[in-house]
Image (tube, rainbow, N blue to C red; front, side, top):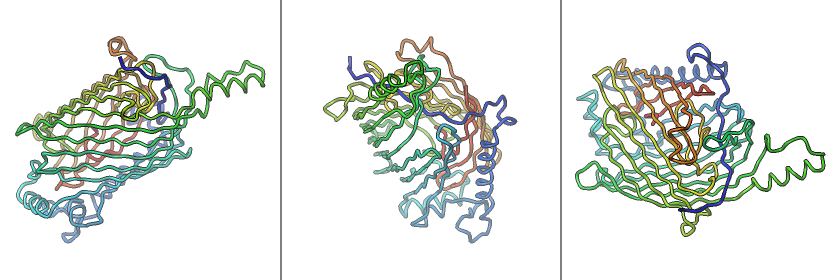
Length: 430
């Protein structure tokens, strides 16, 4: 059994709108964010109808960023980040998405586009890079970047990224143990995540290695219920000093492991059919630079199932299990990932998630979707069956913003157990 030190966990908190119906009850803050997002995509879809515009698709005359991304050496696709979260006093950010294609790939995609509205689906996914930054009202911020590379006709896949964040988070507890009043923790962390996979023969099966590294400093900002208020002032101050000292920690986690992936999706960015199953198992050990010894296993199953030309469905399954003695730091603890649930709001050594989505294709450019999900968190894998289910639901829309790459962008609005959250999506939500 892997051994490790006991650390507290933390979780973020999103918007506190208490709403019975998404369509009617979004708070003024979220309504403004939705309106801005809708106007953003409507503007994208209406600015490029001139035939000689680099943002006009030669096939249907609609707004399309394919030529700009492929033919402009400095071109990139901006994706706005709207943070509707009172816990960090809201915030804004942006992601710049860059595509890298050879001249041969560009010519082939252009030929397919002229001949067939969906003719680029089977072409090799181009490599892409991203740069991101976000800042919030309470001083939290994040900067980072990543790269997705394909070599030897896609037989070698690389995915990697890194960044630095200084974020104020709330500690709600782990598994079925929750505090009535959360602690507020400040986390400063530098992280790197990457994987390298190789295709096995002619099968859509990829095997490789994965690495995850995080160096973090955690200290409490507010002690919540742990601070207490029953002691005399001099004892109260000493008590709070002791608690702050116990909760302040510098910790590094460093893991290396195996990655197995089965992938038949028709598009890497916005798939409409196919399957992707991935199993990761990582060992965190002192010999790799980790302060904590434990093992992490994660399985993800994505199923994209078309019904006909207008309707399609999708199903996502995710399980995570950290084999560790005691609690892990917040950034290392598995967390429930569902639209409608703030990041890291529900954590535990064992996580189970199921999410389904139905999409209606209105025309070749526009589509709408509805989704529902449920997840459970526990501190032991055997306790998942008895854990409370957290249910979410919502809907959104997509616009095919770069037909040459099959890339869609849009907005999802999701309602969870406590919050209603807005997401701007570039590609699939998964």
